[in-house]
Length: 290
Image (cartoon, rainbow, N blue to C red; front, side, top):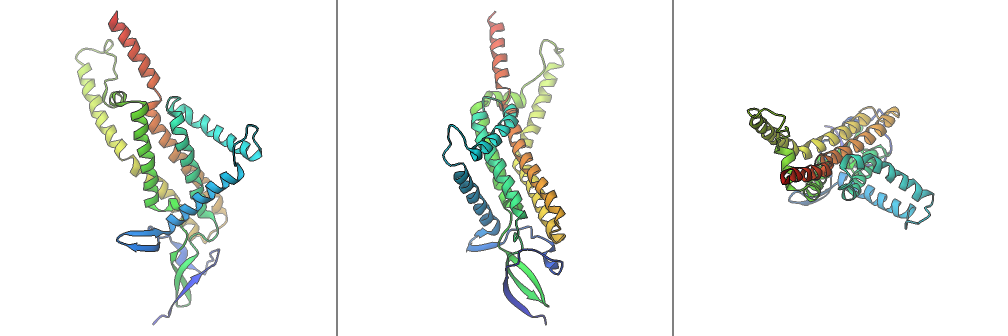
């Protein structure tokens, strides 16, 4: 009969003598259970803590914006300018003022949440028990926010909800329907018998596109969760070999960039050519008038 003893571990690093840390549970651990499915998990607590650190850091370092910026404000403004140059050509000038705060927030938030998994103690501090002289961690207190599938679904739904609001506001229903189902072929340059066939093809393609749009929250969330969760397992499985920290730094940056860029691209597909459609509508109206 093995002796089981409940205890708390406060070690900051793993060693090879702790093989029970070799895998990370797919589900987050409950820190406070309110019953009926309501609970505060370790990923939620980590997400709140990192969010508070981000807010306090920006308020403390940047403070009140000055006309003549200091060093910290200059660095922050340079970061924003770099992100502006990246995102504005994608989403278009018309929708950019509304989209930019969302994209910046998503990028910084996801990036720091991804990197939070590299902090000492993440996944190695918590409640556990001893079996046959070896400690088994069963309820870690700290887990990266983006290593929880529920968290990445929430981020994807925020992105998708903003996508719907922005495209209906800045593109409009008429342009959305045209982009999805409109016949893009030039009627004058297309044989009469072929034009209605192409119209049917574009309708079918539009239906496929609607399905593709509807599953975007799932694909966004799975991509982010899979990469961050896989990185956590890699670090734990290799007993936190230092060289893998550099790789996970790169993965965290890439995944934050990919998630934010895809959010921008989805919006830009409908909003970035609004001026072209407006010009085309005016040109068509002028031709019909003549």
